Length: 571
Image (cartoon, rainbow, N blue to C red; front, side):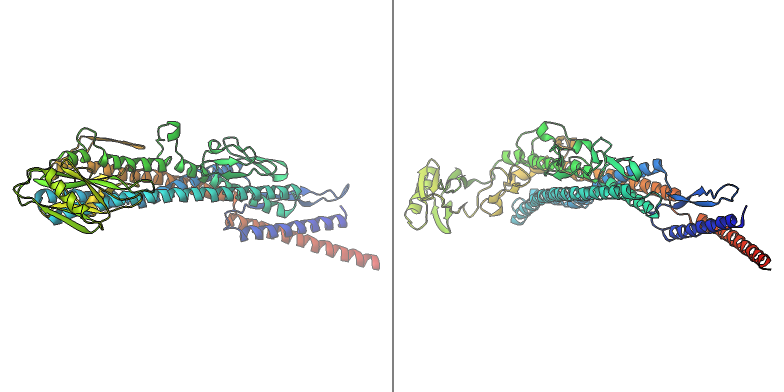
């Protein structure tokens, strides 16, 4: 071995140690970075010629790798993205409906409504008790209207989130492609190649938050991305996607790709708004799927439970409608035609009951009052109607025409699109509402009868006892999307709507927490395996210090030998 060979070997060792120290310094500096994988040097033996000392050089650099754990980490990221999104939106549903059946506005208002009827039952002649029934019923109906609007707003928010998420998904795929291009162009032996590998893996995990992914490694560290359903995301130029308000569409094929997503935020958002009712499919049993459809159906089911007149036992509406009138005589009106551009408004005032001398009949039309007091000669309600007809027609400024009928009179506007207001009373009492305490056909139109709200009619006193009995009956059945209940009361039905939402939120929330905890533990395992271990780096530092000292000592010895040789030659 020549001194020159020994010198080359020592210098090579110093260079290697210097690079290793720089790499160790970088590892330590990134010890808290979860997206950084530990770097190491790939060593190679150097050949300096025959009969010469070789040495150790740098062949390249390597990132710590655990492919199976990385794939598991990516898969759990997708699951966490899905369940986390589900939990967030079901929490919003719970906030909208109320956090529990005890504090939810709908159940509280219904309980108040029942109590108001119970008070009215014990105090049927109390105007305050009657007003309380109408007020609490109106608050209950308005709460259903509010929930309907809130569900629609939530639906719009999910749709907006889906559209934005698809755009973010596209952007991430573009970034993966850009990193792929850089990886193909980079030298694997370059220290910067490892940074690109880390950037690639970080982007894949971000993509996995939106959709389940499967990676296939290509040349020089670039990757192809697919969903577990086989949809190509990045394999060359990235795929592009759009959202049409219902489905996520492949821009290239024009076809929906919803069915090729298994996990991730996008799948959660699609499932939340899914509605297969048009396909005559039963609603999904998954508590986080078809949520909007189920909520709409359940609110409409509630409305039907209070407005339908069919069913056994007798419904609230049927019970009220079938109750007898408590007034001896009354004059009620029914609006048959609403004024439009093509029709004129008309309404019929109908007199019913047993007439007595001294009964005072009053009709208010557009703020003008027309009254007639029955005499002993008035033996039929036809005569009362005729008298009031004459009085109304005698006033040309009232704006309506009266036509006499059998125990009734019809009021008509003179032209199309002209409305008018009517109020009737007998002996100072407005008529009792014969039926339809609640009106409307769905969650938007559900309301207390307008005649009760404006005071033109009042409640049937004789209905209170039967209505309270109907509320307490526990033999009812309730069917709506995502909810089926048998042998329940009205209170149970309302409570089940709230309770089902609360139960679903808890189920999904528990799963989301489990997935989040599992992801966190897997991330820690992955980081422990491929991340920087400071204890290990300190041990490596000691090894490098010793190697550096040995190389330096060798250089010193070689230098002394050269000096000795130089002195011997120069004599």
